[in-house]
Image 1 (tube, helix red, strand yellow):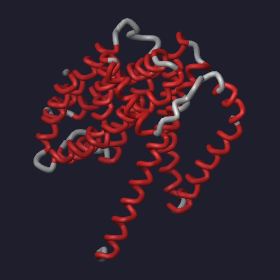
Image 2 (cartoon, one colour; image 1 turned 60 degrees about the horizontal axis):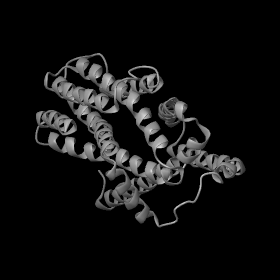
Image 3 (cartoon, rainbow, N blue to C red; image 1 turned 90 degrees about the vertical axis):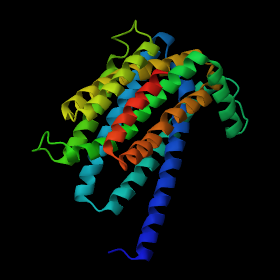
Image 4 (cartoon, rainbow, N blue to C red; image 1 turned 45 degrees about the horizontal axis):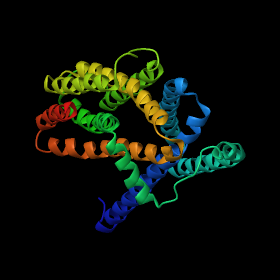
Length: 306
């Protein structure tokens, strides 16, 4: 049993790791957004949607590969060795950016004047800039909420399978991995097909159809049907995979290059902030009863329809 001192030290360590992880994600969000002006300069407007789909696919595949390799490394090496390995990867990425610095500088000269106001002022200006464009802002809110839904889905599914008798021969961790794999694979397929299918359907309509599947997932939980959860989650992920590159391409093509980095940072921040919020809200409802979480999903879908 942990003593009070051990518990306090462990809690402090977890808090520090959480803060560092948050700062890392925030920095990653900011740095990835800075690539957008270069993308606009290097990719033709007609090819932007396909380019964003490829970028998203690469990101999804790297996440899957990183998770897979991480689990393998933890099976054969001590956690400290894996931590050092992770640090060296960051170092190699930094060296890689230094190696392409000259080439990037050549493109940067064509971007234009960069706004040198402080970060907070830029964030406020960019948010107001997006807010004034009602159509873009509506799409952003819808995609942010749809993206956030997955933050609440996994923990509720983990609680759900404890009371579900389907797939008895499959261990619960594998069921969770299966759901995660289905979501990721469907997202990748959607990214790949974004520029090829449903081209005449607007982002708004795609978001409404996606919202319907949030409601279907809620009903699947209420019906205690794991197969319907898998199916509806895959369709929702597929639709979100189709929509996301189109929205990114729309943002990049619409806004001026000199403002683009800040705009993308703002949109990414809104997209990133909702999953952790959902991962707190829905499990909190489950503390009362799981049925409240399922009903919460239904109410969440109604919010998306607004």
